[in-house]
Image (cartoon, rainbow, N blue to C red; front, side):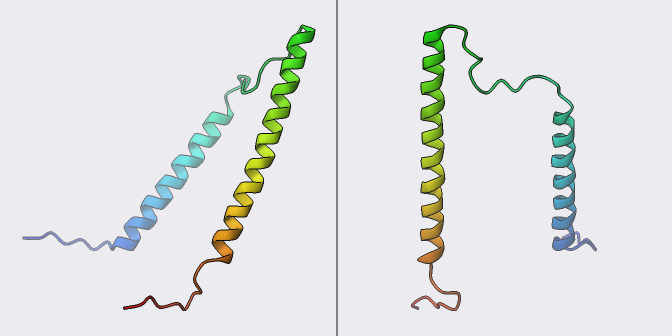
Length: 92
């Protein structure tokens, strides 16, 4: 015997979405309270050779980032431009 509920699947999805959104927002705000330094990049170098290595690192990182943006833009353009039209019906 199946148990029926008065709640619909759409209301369950809305509730789950609201809980997920509030959880993400709470986590984001809680993480913002941390005052530690992010520490993603290298520290500032003290010696001359270390400064040159740091400059090469920053140059290659910048080049890689620019290439990434260009390639992602081209792929996104290609996906949008070459997709099937909205009214397309597949062969049966």
